[in-house]
Structure formats: C-alpha cells, structure tokens
Image 1 (tube, rainbow over the protein chains, first blue to last red):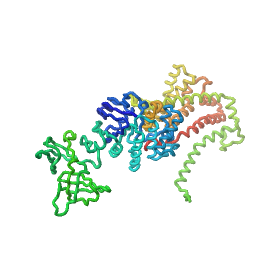
Image 2 (spheres, each protein chain N blue to C red):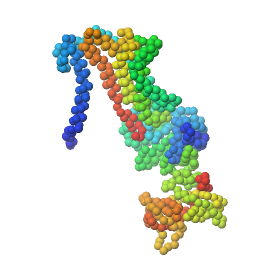
Image 3 (cartoon, rainbow over the protein chains, first blue to last red):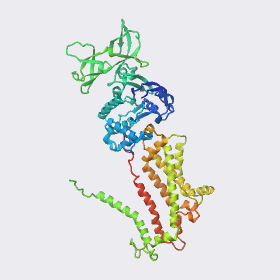
Image 4 (cartoon, each protein chain N blue to C red):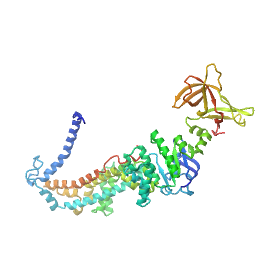
Amino acid sequence: MASVTLHGIGKSFGDTEVLSQVDLEVADREFLVFVGPSGCGKSTLLRIIAGLEEASGGDVLIGGQRVNDRSPRDREIAMVFQDYALYPHMTVEENMSFGLRLRGLPQGEIRARVSQAAGILQIMPLLKRTPRQLSGGQRQRVAIGRAIVRKPKVFLFDEPLSNLDAKLREEMRVEIAKLHQKLRTTVIYVTHDQIEAMTLANRIAILNKGRLQQVGAPEEVFGQPANTFVAGFIGSPTMNFVDGAIEANGTGAIFRAKTLCLNIPGDAAAHGASVILGIRPDHVWVSALEEGQAAQGIVADVEVVELLGSKKNLHLLIGDTRLLASVDASIPVRAGDSVSVRLKTGAIRLFDKASGNRL
Amino acid sequence: MVERRAPNLRGLVIHGLILFACLVCVFPLLRIFSVSLRPGDRIISTDLALIPAGASFAAYGKVLKQTNFLLWLWNSLVITVTTSIIGVSLASTAAYAFSRFRFPGSKLGLALLLGTQMIPAGMLILPLFLMIMRLHLTNTYLGMVIAYSVSSLPFSIWILKGYYDTIPRSLEEAALVDGTDHFGAFLRIVLPLSMPALSIAFLFNFTQAWNEYLVARVILTNSLMYTWPLGLFGLQGQYLTQWGMFSASALLVTIPVLGVFLYSSKWLISGLTLGGVKG
C-alpha cells in the first residue's frame, strides 16, 4: 500500500501542452478517479504515474519515494489497460503469472497467487484458455487478475470498462468496487464516464484541457462544483446555466436575467456583478397549471418531453431562457403545455461570468 | 440432416482453373524428374512418359559419386542458413527500432532502405566484389554471408516493420509494467507474435541466398568453395551437357528448400494477435 503524490506535473508534446502544473495527493488505500472529457490529459497523467510516459516537468512520488527515474517495473504498480492488452500467445494462466515469473517467484507461490486471484474473479475454468477464446467481460476480468496477482502498491486503471456493453459495464463496476473493498489498495482510475466516477470514487479529480479543475468527494464535486466546467460535467442530465446579474433587494439579492427574476439567498455584496446561475434539473420543480388557477412561481412553456422510465425530462422555455427539468414521470405534462416552475433556492449555485468560478 | 448442395458452375470453373494452374506448376518438375531417370542414350527423347523406358537412378548415383555435389550442397547450406539467421536477426531488431522509436533520420533511413531495392542487382555486383576483395573475404563463407545479408536486409526490414506496426503497443506496455524492459518486451511479446512475418523474412533470405548465382560467380573462384548453382553450371560443357546429372542435381537441391518451406508453413498463419486487445 502506498500514497501517490504529484508535484507540478506538466507534459508537452512539441508545442502542445497536454498537462499543466498538476498537484495532487492520493492517500494510501484511496480510490481516486480522474475524470474529464476526451483529450483532457487524464490518460497521459496515469501513464506518467505508471512510467510509460515521461513528464516534461514535476515529480511523481509513490510511497514518498521519487520515482521519476524509475522504469515501470520498478514502481510497484499494476495497470489495467483500456484494450485489455492480454498477451495473445499465452493462456490466461500464463498471462496472469507472467509478471510473477519475471520476478522469479517460486512455482508454488505463483500457482497459489493465480488460483487466489482467479477465485476472486471467478475465472478458474478459463485458466487454460487463450484470450481469443474469451468474451469481452472475461478478458477484462483476466486483465484485472493479471494486476491483482502482482500485489502492487498502486493499481492503475485506464478506462477499463469503456469497451464493454452497458449491462456488463454496470456489473464490472460493482465488481471493481467490491475488489477495492476486499484488497484495500490505492487505486487510480481513469474514465470519461461521470457515473463510473461518482459510483466508484472516494475522491474525484476533474481535469479539463490539462488542468485540474477540482478534487473532492463525489458529493462535494456534485453539490459544490468549483466552476461551471465541473458543474456542467458532473451530473446527468447536465446543470442548467442562465446568464444574468445580481441586484440588491433590501438586505437580500435578486438574480435578474432577460426573462427571469429570482430572489436568491445571501446578501447583496456581489450586486451588479455579471453571473451565471446554475441549477440542476432535479431542483427545477414543475407543476401543471390548473385551468382558471393563478400561476405560482414562473410560467414556462413545455417544448419537448423525454420519457426515461420513472423520470421524464422537460425542456422548458421561459421567454428566451431555456431550462431543463427532471421530474417524476407521473406528472401529467405534455409538449405544448404551460406549467408553473419553481427553483429550489438552496440548490442555486452562482458562478462569476468572467472566470467561471463559483461565487 | 445436412442438405447436400448441388455443385454450382462458378465453383466448378474456379476449381478447374486452380487444378490447371497446379498442373502448369508441377509439369516442369515432372519433366525434370523424368529426364533424371532416363538412360544416357535417351536424354533428348521427346517421349512424354513420366517413367521412361529403361529408367534408373544412375544419374543420382553419378552426381553423388563423380562430382563434388555434396560439398557444393554443404557450402550452400552453411552460407544460406547463416545468411538467413543473421539477416532475420538484424532485420527484426532494426525493424523494431523503426517501428517503435522516433529518432532523427528514421524516415530518411526507411526511404533509403527502400531506395536500395530500386537499384538493379547487376549494378551492385562490382561494388560488392570490390568491398569483399578489399576485406580479403573472397572465397570465404563470411564474404558470401555479408554479401547476401546486406542485399536482402532492406526488404526484410520493411516486411517486419510493417508487421510490428500492427501489434498494439499496449501489449509491450503491459509487459513493461509486469516487470520486463524494452528488450524483454521485444523478445517475449513482440517476437513470438511476429512469427508469420519472421517466417516470411527467413524464407525470403533463404531462397535468395540458396538460388543466387551471379554474386557467387564473382566472389567464389575456388571450386572447393562453390555453392550448388556454380557447381551445377560446371555440368554444362561446351560440347556436352550432362542433362541426366543436371536434372538429378536440380531435384536434389530442392529438398532442403522444401523442408524449410514445410517447417515454416506452420508459422505462416494469420491472426496470431487476435484476442489480445479489444478489436
């Protein structure tokens, strides 16, 4: 077991900077997930930790030891690759024992470790098969098994589930969570799937354009996003953003957009500031307008209704402001209806328009 | 119950054409075999019988007893096997460097290697001879091995580089993480997966060196160092060509090549890397 520390990690390919000044501390036995859109540098960062890529600047420490100059084999890490990377000319057993044989472990111990890992991953009957005789899910299990047998200090997972179908992905997600509970080893996991990140991580590190945007527990990055990027990236459906300004209202404050005016909590310290209001679709409350009944809250037109099973997404139009509401499927609303809309004021997040940072 | 399919015309035509092509390929061999069995007085007979009247293996006996055939064969084997092993070893490592590492001049190097293939073989004979002569390696195995290795190296490098490019790098990276170094990953992962391309490169080197005549003619002047093509040429006299012995020798020299081909064929299978990574 070991902690992983990154100090000012940077990486450039020619003139293209893919990582800039990444500072991060991954605690011993922690499950940290790097998440971000394609090309944000998360896989490059993982490969730098693994030693498969050289950082242009900064230090990588594993267990407090600087490992920049150590080859991957000397970093006591194990890695599960996105494309499994199983050795096609070896059986499952040979694949799993490859690293142990290289390290010259006694045959008895190799057999014991392989059996133990195969038992955990339920791949005992597959040991004599070659990778081409396995399904995608089985190959992924073998790839994980090959990492487990090494008993490394740190596990690195590079989008391990992205090649699996949705159902299998869900199953393997649970398997990986169970595995971490059982092994209690430091895990650094890369994904672009924010559901994977939210369900697996102790902490999530969100990257964009090579820069760390926020590091925190799943609840924290979901509830208290550091900026509009994090707010928009984490959570599905994505957060609503409305441009506007803060105005003083007695001792309180008002958010005023073109076609929207809301009392918001807090003082008017930031009055006059151009801001972006963020509200998650779950926190946009919608009720059908009864005929002849005066509207409570804001009146909106329903443009599109997307039924998702127990929930439905309503695409609302308030003047020229668009909002997405995620509501219970039983609410009787159809496209073209007018509805009453209220926002959960406690869930409103305000961001500075210029920097995008949360106020 | 499996329904028996009626023979279709397209299949019949294709099979007919394949059969015809096979006959065209095999016919000269059968004729050589037939000539090698003929008694001396019927060598230029136009008889088409595969086993001629008065057939005997006398020509084979004469070749083995009255000429240096076995010595020529030994010389050829030593030069060819050494050339093939050295050629494939050099090509496999050079191709790996070209495939996996970016270094100054890598593209130019590949282009130059390809460029050497554009030069007619005849043009290289004189420079090769001069180099070998200045190295005092005429009439030596080493001289022949150097001459043959360098001439087949560019093609082998290109074949192997192309094959390595299809092997996912993540396999080597997995090996690096598992505990090996770059050379170990090359030896344990890349080479075993490249057996089809290595076999092709080996066969190319082998057949090139085995059948080569012109370079050998220039470099080897001592008859004890002759390879079989040079020795065989000696059977062709100004007034009389020993067609029976010539044919018998021609058939005998195909045996090693046939053996190498048959042995290599088990490696010439496609899809060795299937299943290793997500396809």
